[in-house]
Image 1 (cartoon, rainbow, N blue to C red):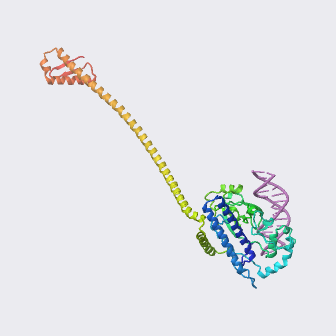
Image 2 (cartoon, helix red, strand yellow; image 1 turned 90 degrees about the horizontal axis):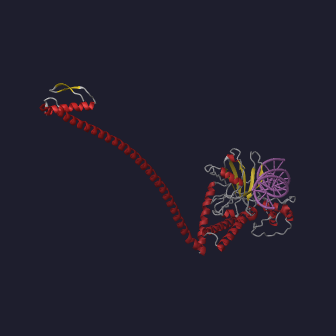
Image 3 (cartoon, rainbow, N blue to C red; image 1 turned 45 degrees about the vertical axis):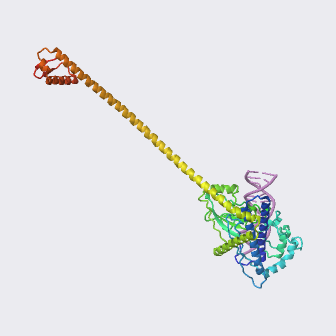
Amino acid sequence: MESSSNTLSYWDLKPLIMNELTQAKDLLKQLQNDLDTSSTSTIASKLLVTKVICSFDNSVSMLNRIKTDAQPTAASTTTTATVISPPGVINSMPIDSKVIDLTLTDKTPPAASAYRNQTTGSTTAAAGGGAGSIERPASIFENNPPRSDSRSDYEYNNNNNHPRSDSRSDYESDIAKDQPKKRKVLPRWTENVRVCEQSGLEGPLDDGYNWKKYGQKDILGAKYPRGYYRCTHRNVQGCIAIKQVQRSDKDPSYFTVTYQGRHTCTQASEDIPRNTSRSKHDQLNKCQDPKQKKTEVLISFQTSSRDKSVEEISFAKSCQVRAKELSLQKPTQLSKALDISIPKISLTKEISNQQSSLAKEFSIQKSSHTKEISNLQSCQTKEISSLTKDFTLQRSSSAKEISNQQSCITKEFSIEKRSIEWVLWLNDQAPFDIVPAICSISWSYAVLNMVHAFLSSGLDGHSYMLPNVGVQRWSF
DNA sequence: ACGATTTGACCTCC
DNA sequence: GGAGGTCAAATCGT
């Protein structure tokens, strides 16, 4: 429903400027508190300063535009407004340094607007409770937002018959009285977020912010309804961020999330969006495979990406310059402290990182060494065991062999002994006169051999031929 | 009891 | 007149 031409009027920019100024004011308050209580780090304080500068920059930039754009002209003029989010000031995208380009529309030429104002102004004044043009203080969202802040995304027509118009605040009535009746223009972008299909949930999806659902609508031609969410801190802090979530018809695992307006609540002050989600958020996230969970963010702004990049760069540069200027022009205690503390902090961080990585490395090495030692021990134990076994076997076989050899030797010795004894006996018992012959060495040797062979074979009572003796029968 | 969600009615815009 | 966006009472969940 967003318009697509490029004209901006004062009334288009006013809410944005108010928003910027309110934000700057809040940030300054926060900074003041921080400095009073010393509750935050110097880096956080510096960040706050940068945010404030950026908000002021944006406001000034927009006000400069108004000077030229708001000049009544005969024909409708076309301009492009660009509101850039400062890197520190997080809009509802959980990504730093986002650039929001607004290509906004005012289809009502100034003349026509004036006409409308004239025709409707009086009735609105009546509805607003009087013709007085009460100047609303700058803190329009200060803690107690107007009852109609729930309508702040809209500027209603000044319709006398509008059943709710009488409940609107004086402020808005005044605005309504004076300005064209258009929807407030807010930064708008979309993201395509993929979640697992099993979840079957159409939660607001976890983007780190807390959202409250305020409506659901069946959309013509769409299979799934569209959910409407606004920031939980809307009532307390006047945060204007809203989003719409709709499941894709083509791929139900995708949700198209359209964000509108950036967070001005304290959530935005925290650089890292928190995952303080509940219920469905948690379920969805638990369900998501870490690999699948990688969110495919397709941010589509209404201006070309080339313009966006250029503006992003120029904005970043402007922020840098301003921050530098500030720290040079006002060498306060804070900036001095920052100059000293930042290198110190980064050094400490580096040391801590190195320590951590060394500890990690040591742990890994220790682990691998322990493993190696354990393996070696195991191998050695095995080897020892095997050696012991071998040794036992060898000892056993050696013992057996020795025993066998002993037995053999003993047997041989015994045989020889008996042989000699027998020869001696034979010599004593010789019935013939054969002593000289027996005494001859050759005969003795032959007899000894014969006896040895005889005893070895275990034969008993056989006849043997003795050399040079003839047949003799010997009985043992 | 209180906060979140649902849902029908209402409103704006095209 | 209809689609989209919002409100607010009713309902639900803790």
